[in-house]
Structure formats: C-alpha cells, structure tokens
Image (cartoon, rainbow, N blue to C red; front, side, top):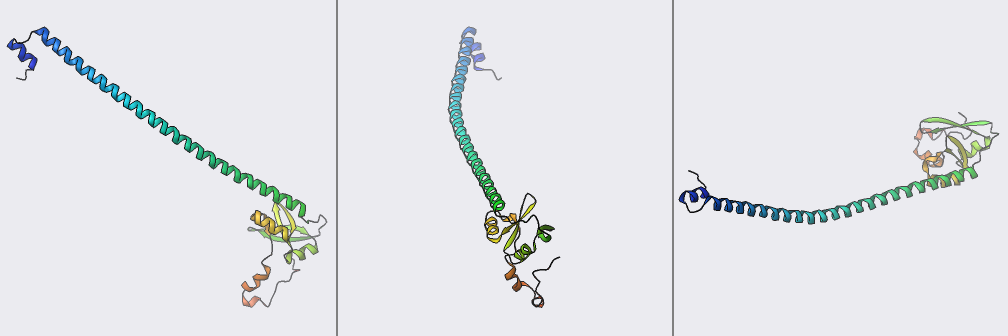
Length: 190
C-alpha cells in the first residue's frame, strides 16, 4: 500500500513515464546541488576555522619557543656564573694558599664522613687550631689558606672549605658542663 506519489500519479494517468523520470532527475539534481553548496559552505567555514586555528597554533608555538629560549638562556647564564665563580675561587686559592712542601707533620681532619690528612708544619697546625688557617679542597687536593681567604671562598662556594674552626670559641658553651673543666689542648696530635 505504500505506493509513492509518482506511482499513484502514473496509475491515475495524470503524468507520463517520461515526465515522472524528468521530475525525479530534477529532484535528484536539486538535492545534489544542495549538498554541493552545503559542502562548499562547510569547506569554506572549515577553511576559515583552519586558518584561524593554524594562526593561533603558530602564535602559541612561537610563544612556547620564546619561553624555552628564555629558560635555556637563563640556565646558560647560571652555568656561566658558576664557572666564573669557580675560576675566581681557583685563582684565589692558587695565589693565596700557604702549603709548605717541606712540612714534617700530618694534620687529620674530617671531610664529610671520612678522615683526611694534609702535611703541615708545627706553626700551621697552631694556626689551624686558632682558626687563622682553613683547609680547602679542589680536585681532591687540599690547600691551606688564611682565614680571610677562606671566608671569601666560603661566601662564593661553601662546599670548597672542608675544615675551618671558626666556631671553636662558641662551641664551649654548647658542650656538656662536665667537660668544660677539661679543654682540648691546641697541640694535641691524633
């Protein structure tokens, strides 16, 4: 019972087969052209959106690239400063160290958890005990430097000064009261 309008009109004799075919062709052509124009509109809108999104993405990529470049420049500047500080510290220690190649005694000190030693004279041992000398380490070599130099070096690169008894005077107050009567002698060799 579901005859199409075309079939009903043909049965009634109101239209001929050719007219029906022609009407059907025009309907299909109209539908096809409507789809084409709609597709063109969609493509045009998509092209506009694509151009906008491409320009947005390009601008965003440029911003990200600029941010990465700034961060990289900042890191390079920090590395350059570190190298400059290290070279300054090396120069200071090379010029100011007072290591004696003819030292006859050994001075033991703690570096991190390890006991290390350096060759010193008796006078240098006394200066170390009075905090007038300090021990610095560069490339696993130990250097004796005056206290003023040690403070300069410690301000720039703190980990390079491995033994500096600058807090020896204030340390007595921190000790237990039972040991205050028994001070450690300056000339103690262990």
